[in-house]
Each structure stands twice: as structure tokens, then as C-alpha cells.
Amino acid sequence: MTPLMLVRIALKALLLNRMRTFLSVLGIVIGVAAVITMVAMGEGSKRSIQASMTSMGTKAITIMPNFQRRGGVQLDANSSPEVLEEADVKLLRDKARYINAVSPMVTANGQAVVGNNNRPVTLSGVTSDYLVIRNYTIEDGVMFDDATDRMAKVCVIGQTVVTNLFPEGNPVGKTIRYRGIPLKVIGTLEAKPANDFGQDPNDVILAPYQSVMKRFNGNTDIRTIFANSIGEGYAAQATEEIMNLLKERRHWTAPTDPFMVRTQEEMINMITSTSDMLSIVLTAIAGISLLVGGIGIMNIMYVSVTERTREIGLRMALGARGRDILLQFLFESVMISLLGGLLGIILGLCSSEFIRVFLSWPMNITVTSVAVSFGVCFVTGVFFGWYPARKASRLDPIEALRFE
Image (cartoon, rainbow, N blue to C red):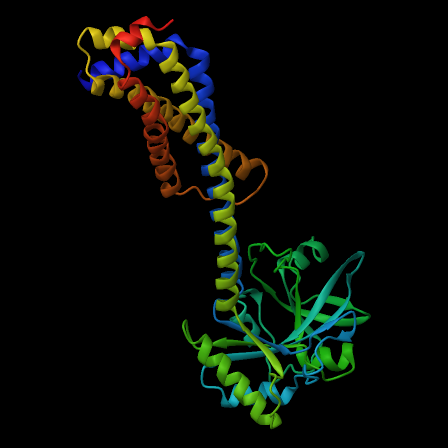
């Protein structure tokens, strides 16, 4: 029999049992749609997180005291009580070869007030290098100068602060009162996209770190030092160099490190690895639906072979070979799978778009996931349809004609 004839016979058989065919196709549709949607959800989340991390600076390095505490109790007796100091900032700026920008960060919490408008926001004391490290850009005005504005009561604000405190117009040149102390706005930052960590990068007030330390905190403790490596691929050398310089300054001999040095590359790789694992788990769960759909096809084909035993016997008596019977039932199984695959792809694309638009979940549909899903449908049809088809092709014509 020609392929066209096999297709016609398969279509006729499927249309004679519409409900059975519909239920078989439905299992494949749900499986394929679930796989495409889950893969799109995992890929979308991964790319969104990577974009958020990249927006915070791909070459950024974070240095913090190596405290390991919970509820105010130090968990590790060997963990370091060391704190970061201004001398550490100067040392890294002068001696480190693998970094090209350094900024301490000290913070103060309070209420920012402008007239009748107020907003709780963290005041961050930094240097001008912080803009380079965290990929901020001045939109209007200027950044404060590290040499001349060290103790000045000035600040640069993000767009969220602008929107909430200065709804009427340009804030540059105006004053914010923070914990009762006036800060003159000398610049605004360009808006950055929101990240996936529950933080708004535009909800910031930046001021000279020495001014924040003396006027708001009353001490010289530095919470964090941010640095920028000289280029992509230099994170490991920069990390080792920073740790060595900080240890050398303190004549450090203890087995534990006095500080934690974390690079943005490490964070991106770690989060990407976690996202990949999540995508695999989601895809595996969705793949179970495809497996169930395939088992459904096999059951339907078994029932079809049993019900059409006399038909098979008659065809073989009229000269049909075992291979023709095998191909006939195999074509029926593959057509069910491919039809389910096409409808499943359409449903998967529509459901992914629905989730993106109405649930605001980042989705990324890949050609690979669609192609693999369709390929799996074909393999499913062949795999689960082959055994019932083989059984049909091996029926004895005489016994088949006697079947009741």
C-alpha cells in the first residue's frame, strides 16, 4: 500500500471513533502544552534573573565582614570579628591591580521628607565609583565630588524617590530633609528596570559616605565595600588579590578568612545553575503528562486491534501482508500523536502568552522546546503504537475471521 492510501485508511478509522480519538489526542495535547509552558517559564525566569544581575554590574565584587551569626549569636567560634575601615578602601584603591573602582557603603535608615510628601528610604553613603560599579547613570545634574564634597550635605536620588517626593517637577537644587538634616539634591539617576529580588534599584538616596558616617551614624564603621574588576574573566584574580591585601594589612594568620568576597559572576553562575535545575524539574513533571498520553494511545490501539480483528483477518485474506497491517495501525498511532502535538504546540504558545500578559511572569519560548516537543510526539506515536500494530500484523487470518 502507498503512504497516501495508508493515510486515508488511518483517517477513516480515526473518524469512525471520534470520541476515542479525541480522548487520545487530548492526552498528547495536555502533555505537549505543559512541556512548552514549563520550559518557557523556566527559561523566562532564568533570563530575567540574569538580566537583573547584569544590571547590577557584571564585574562587581562585594566585600563584607565574615560574621556568621543568627539571632545575635555567633555560630562559629572561629569567625572573624574584623570590621572594614576607611584604610581598607584606600589600600584597595592604591594597591589592587585587578580592580579599577572602589566604593565603601554605609547606610542609615529613616524618613525622607519634602514638604507634605514623605517616604521611608535607605540613605546610602558611597563614593562616585559606586555609579560605575552598579551601572548607574546621572540623568540630570551632577554626581558629588569625592574630594570637595566629603562632608557636604548633598545627595543624588533615584527615580522612585523623584516620583514620590517631587511629583511637581525637577528636584535638582531642592532640599530633602532626612532625619531632620537637610540634604541638597544635586543630581538624579536614570531609571533602571526592577529586579527579581524584591528590590527597587530606583528607590535610593546616595550621599558622600563620610557625611553619612559622621552626621547620621556617629561612627566610622563600614558595612560593605564594593569594587569593580578590570574586566570580564578577572574575578578570580581580583578576589584573591583583595583577600591577600586585607589579610596582609592585618597580619592575619588565622585559618578562617576575615572577610567574605563575592563576585557578581559567582552569583550569576549560582543562580543560573539553580534556574537550570528548576527548569529540568518542571520539564520532567510536564513530561509525565506526555508519558501518560502515550500510554493512552497504546491502550486505544490495543482496543482498536481487538475490535477490528475480523477486519484485519479479511484484509489479510484478500492479500494484505503483515507489513501492510503493521503500517496501517502504526500510521493511526502516529497521526494521533502528531495531531495532538500540533494542537499542543498551539495551546502551549497561547498559555505562555496568557501567563506573560495577565500574570506578568517572564516567559521565553524557545524554538528548541517546540521542536523537541513535536519530535517527542512522533517518537511517542511510533513507540506506543508499534506493539499493538505488531500484534495486529501477526494475527492468523483464519483465527481472525472466526473472532467474535
